[in-house]
Image (cartoon, rainbow, N blue to C red):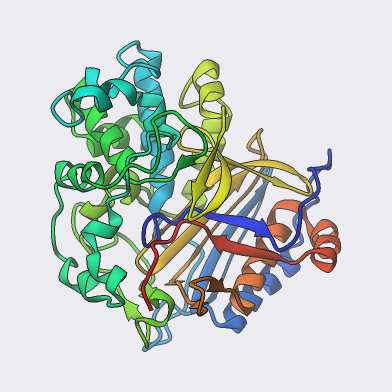
Length: 411
């Protein structure tokens, strides 16, 4: 989520070659810290990152958690991870598929006839919710309408507002569909995962967040991951500074915020170490069986902010010079996160930042990327592919971490 959902993907400024059958290189701890420092020096307030290569780990942080007190960020800070929540929700649904309580290709109307009635409920399947081919509109614009008018007013008005998931679903269903159900490319929409959470509640008879906590978070052995019950982030954390592409200047802190607007689509908080643990457990078959993991890794093209990504069921693939990686990204007001893992869960990287939408928008409505984006891209590539690959690739094609699912903000 990041205004809508920040499905942040790393896109090359040029054309990426097909991934080579390369093995990511070892951990260069000094280079990793220097690349993290470079992101802070480029203008990011604070960033923390965890990198894993088998049994070897590196944890680093650079910058400040509070621009007024200059309190430093720490590697173990709890962070709002936004749309990474979707992987947790998808795992919970696949567990129900494994138990025979849910059929992936059954119509949503079978489970939620009152919420998605009639022909639409029969055409849209559970799989289409999870891979974003339902073409149900996103609810973010209607929930925060001032952003479409060039004002951050609705961000402040909704700070302590509690949204019911049924209300968010109605906002999405009332919007203009982005296409025909099941037709690729899909269109990334948070509404899909709010519906998935309600479906989970229907088949389990349990609150979705409680079910995910017991059967996904605890099963993965995560100690610092949760759906907070209050507007505050539990545990040691940074503030969350939102710039909204210059609409908010100076950037405003939204670390205290009612996250009911995210719910099963984006309300989880976690540490970077927990995210690596989670994806490693998932990719090693510890949370769902082999058949369900294979379903999660069947990808379709989904447009997120106009950019295509290879999206499965709550997880997407990214091809880098050193191979294919799986994971998700996320963003909420003031915080963004990226978490990617090699298919075997051996090489992993998760990082969080505490200032979002720092970029500007040009006269054509396009995002203008700058030094922060290039520095984040360099850290990303170094963390996953190692110093030699990162240096060679950066010399040929600079990488930019592009937030590809942004609500169009009027300027």
